Structure formats: C-alpha cells, structure tokens
Length: 532
Image 1 (cartoon, rainbow, N blue to C red):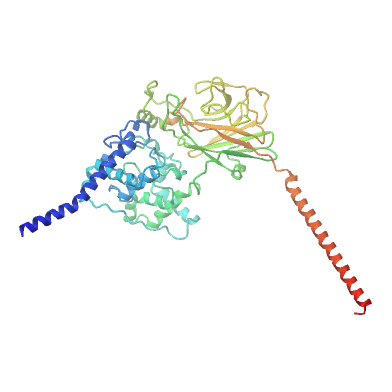
Image 2 (tube, helix red, strand yellow):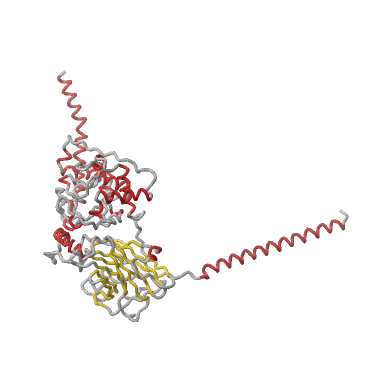
C-alpha cells in the first residue's frame, strides 16, 4: 500500500510539473519582452523610472504599487487580467504608452502581462478576489436633448466643472493645483478630445470611468453617489452621454489639404462670425519639438483646428485650439514650476529656477515662394540659407506680425503684417488672420495663388506650461488650396449637351416612324392594284 501511495504521489507530481515549468517559462519569456520593449520607460524594477521616464508627462506606470488608472474593478482594487491586456493591446491615448497589438505576438503580450504582475506582491495575495464590476447597459432613447440637459445638471452638481471647466476644456479653478499620488503635475482631461481619453472614447467607456475612478489621480469614483442615492445609475449614464457630446461624433481625420472656398463679398474677420459655422474644419495634430535643444516632450497643445475662405483678393484663415489658460496667467505659475521641475532638461540648457509668465503664441508658416514640385523648406522654421515666411501671433501684447524665420533662433520681422483678431473663451483660443493674396513684397511675402498647393505648417506655445523658444508644439507640412469657383460652363455645358442629344434622338425616332408609315401605305396600295 505504501508503495502504491508513493507511486500515486509521484504520478501527481509529474502531472503538475509541466504546468509549473510552463508558468516559469512564461514569466522568463515575459521578462525578455519587458526588458526589450518596456524597461526603457517603466524601469528595470518596474518602478516607472526608466531612462526615458523623465521626458514624459504623465509618467510611466509604477508597477510596484499596483495602482492602475484604467480598470473594470472598483476603486482601490487590482485590475483583472483582461484590464491589463487591454492596456497592453490598445495603449493609453494621450500618453506615451503605445498599442502593442500588431507589434508583439499574442503570446508575447500574455507573457509580458504575467511578468508585470511579479513586480507587486499584491498580485501574489491569493486572499484578494479580483472581479470586474457589473456595468449596466446604456439607457434606451439615445442621447437626446433632454438626456444631455440632465447630464449637464449633474456635471455641475457633482463638481466636474471644478477641474474640467465650465465648458469641459480642462480649465476649471482647481486645474492649476492638480497632481497625481506621486506628486507629479497632472492635467485635467480636455473633454472635447475624446480620442485622447485613456479609457476609451465612447459613452460606455466614460460611464465605466465614472464608476471606477482613475486610481492614483484626483479623478474619483462616483459609484458611492449611486449607493448614497444622490443620483441613479441612469443619471450617471446621462452624465457620460453629456461628456461624450462635447467631442466630435467621430475622431477627426487628418487630411493633407485645407480647402479655402471662394465667396463673393467681404470675408469673416471676427473669430465668432457665424460664417465660420458653415465652413469645413480641418484638424492637425501637434507634437513636442524634440529635434533642437532644449527639447520639449510634453506640449500642452495637442492640435489645432483650421478653416479658410477667400474672395479672390484676400484670404481669411481661422485657427482655434484648446488652451487651459489665457497666458500669461499668474494663477498657473505654481503649476508651470512643477512642470519645469518634473521634465528633464537638456545637458546644454538646464530648466529655469523659477517659472515666468510667458504668453501664448501661434505661428502659421509658408514657404517664401510656392514650389512647383514637392520640394519644401526645412519644416522646423527653415534655415539660414532657405528661410520660411511666417505669421506670428502672441497673446501679450495681442498682435500679429509677419517675418522670415531662419531657424528657431532667428526671426526677422517684415513691414507688412496680416490683420488679426483673437478671442479667448472658456479654455479655447480662436484667431483669424486676414491678408491680401498678392502683396508688393514679392521677394519675401508668399504670394497666395488660386489653384495651387501652398505648403503650410503650424506651431503653438502654451505660456502657462513654460513653453517659449524651442519649447513648443509643432506640425509637419500640410497644404492650403484656394479653390476656384466652378465656372457656369461646367454646369451649363453638360445640360446643353444632354438637351441636344435628346433632341437629336427624338428627331431620328420621328423620321424613322415617318419612313415606316410611308412604306406600309405603299405596300397596301400595290396589293389592291394586283387584285389581292
């Protein structure tokens, strides 16, 4: 019997050994993936302190504390494996965390997920039961006017506007004070850019974030308000629907060409002229300037909306962008100081010891001459031997100038400048530039011609983020096209051709019918004469 029990025990051990060995292999394989692809940001020990971490805002996740923002579990709870896989697969928009699905195999992603859990003993605590919350489905009836009105009421009553602002641009009175649990400055989310929401862009995604909160940040869970019967689950859904309604219905598509329609009469020169609502808007993303020292990896302006219209003599170009502060703003100086202290400096340019009240700025860039082909000047403000023509607008003093940029450090103003009007409204700048298509200075001013692809690029500085000089957000080259009106002949000529073709066709049919009728009469007459 003893021998039988020993054999049975050996058989059991042998049967489980492959599973134990497989788990060890998975963890080892996960470590290899982590060291190759993840440690540069998250650090070798998973503490979020990799070599690149100091250039990032928000900082990479510190896995040792097991505090995760995006989960389906209750606030303060560990994420499920599905939560971790979702973050690995889809990335975290609005941060430096990319989507790894399609870059790593399914096995590699599962292995690295298992390895991440080894950084914290909390995952090894088998007494913890990790379970996702039960989420309700979106109420029927859709997000109509009544639903959005109810959502807006709760947006105000539960204090969302304190951080996110009255219109949701992340400019609330508490926004300059925000920091995460590690003490790093943190931006209140701009609710007008749902494609940058780390938990997903849909109303259902927003509802889940309201239920779970974002652990490690000032964003709380509102599940307790349901438990306390301050609001119902359906009303929380209405809040989610309202937040979603602040963004475009679809993620904006980046298009290469801005089409400026031609109109008759005066152009809309005011930023809030009703004519702008009837014109197409174009979205262009901006990224940090990381080529020239001092580099800037955390720009506050993530993109600009552009509209354009002309009347054959002048061009009006409207640029709008979200900005949490009307800089210079002393209320944001402490926040600016924390940003500068958090972000790494270049070896050649240490960060300033004190924050300064910098203005907000915008630059619209063109080549001096429209190229015949695809050759364009250096996109980063040209070069000494090949300058670019720019319009530069600043919030203080509020004005626009034109000039030639010969690199980041040299800008030579020109006598002629575009007219400019600007307005700041609840976290959004709107600026309209107006200029004649043709100017006397043909050597330096770009001559704007219809029917041509005119290269254009954009630059933005948020003064309350410590941005000035080379610390800025940049775009690549795009194109501006001044459309020509459709000639009347383009519309009339096809109509005339159709009428003529139809008339000729009818004439042929009538003649054929006449011939057929005459032939039939002749045959009947011959028959009568022959006696048939």
